[in-house]
Length: 338
Image (tube, rainbow, N blue to C red; front, top):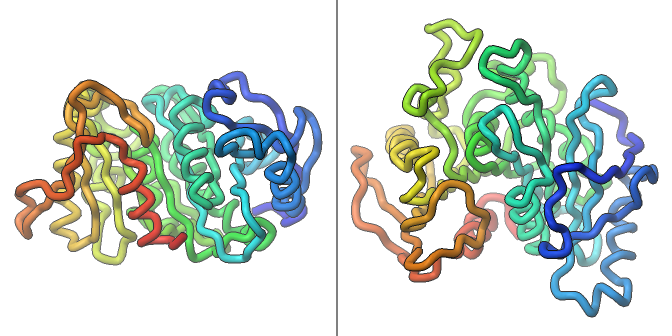
């Protein structure tokens, strides 16, 4: 891992979402060098500026931070919350979707979720990872390794950022949901993309899976490329879960035609068998890809219980409001605190 004094350069991403709509502002102008240790002070100054007081719930971030080495083009965005500096904030690493071949850390969903979690007081990192087709060499399991290294980056810089290194969660949507599950459920040393020589842990305290892929063969993706038949199970989250793993929150829309909700049903059943704590929230009639504020006519949410055999039972905590912000923050408070 890199020095704690790593210099960062803020650059505007070509994939950036509509920042004005999301009320996201940059901590530094493009090309301006910023040290990690300067981020809390820069954020405090930004949040205290007069225009901030006139704007509802703004969020500040530092964009396009290198974290994988000088030879890698993938970067991360760091969202820093308002309020007094303290040494024990929780942190969340968010992983974008895009079918493993596309997508970006600054696309709308990633920026929206990251901003919402930042407004709730968490330090948030939204990361990129290597992309490519199934047949492209060097993609698998490097994509998983990249996401593990985003967690390690947060842990390396925990002191400067005021993060408690024991309170880091990982979240992701679609392909990012799969990667988040792999970071959380598979071993960070011996699992796919693990690093047995790493001196910094990539373990997390909680996982948020937003309509993630859990079984490649059911969605036309086939097996993980370059991996033997005997090793395929190592790449499936349902086979990686055990009672030593962190809690999981599953969010999925019932009208998802890209990643069928049966995948999340399968994951939930596996978590029951593993005796792993989890919450499973379904958004009725929601399709694939939504942030924490799904909106649609007739949409609503419910929470599904599973018995010890993995059979779904009656829902509880149902709501006619499909917004999943409150249950997501409740989950995070339970696993990494406020």
